[in-house]
View 1 (cartoon, rainbow, N blue to C red):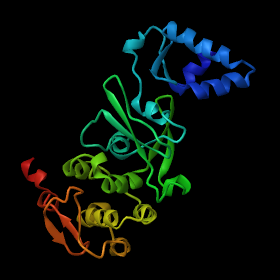
View 2 (cartoon, helix red, strand yellow):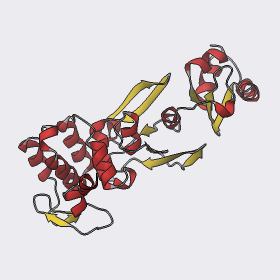
View 3 (cartoon, one colour):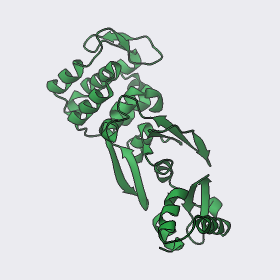
View 4 (cartoon, rainbow, N blue to C red):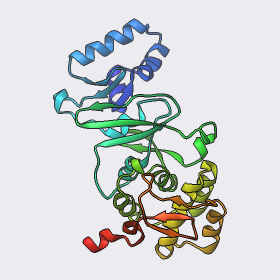
Length: 266
């Protein structure tokens, strides 16, 4: 495959992926490096960060070339997976648009910035790190001429309630999740079980109970989550914000969330 053909079909790619294809054709590593340097100098490529490149369309200046952030995210590691608020934003279910993109990875990684975008790695929770698809809910889809690994809506629901700091304020989380018309509730519960957090089970259960009618939540779904809820009161908010104890979940819920006060303000 000619380099130009590769760039046409790989809007964002890593040095390792390009080298794998190039050296398979009998080219040396030095030739591969020289080719990348040549195309960078010619403005055919843009360096996103060390070892990661974006293809520049013909006739476009590299500094003005649009680079898809989800393709960048998926190429930050072999297992990089768009997650949390970024996963909701990817499918158009985020209440607000962010320029920070969280991604899951099983390896240590550091955050970095490109232009005005931030890419923040999150280690996969240890409880599911060795499981297939990290406990379930990881998919790969075609996007913008490439492929993006992203968490499903079901896993994302659980993830943003498990780590709400990666989903935004409670209003942001609630309003974003309320944009989703349907969840496979069996998949939601299965991932909650895999994650093994009693607090997360209670948070998910509380959210689903509060949205029983639109999400078609049945008693059997709530019963399975209650079996995993904490035996002693815990806080919805990691900062232990005061609120009212919802006894069915042993969860202290801030009044703002309990009554969705932001709807009154709107």
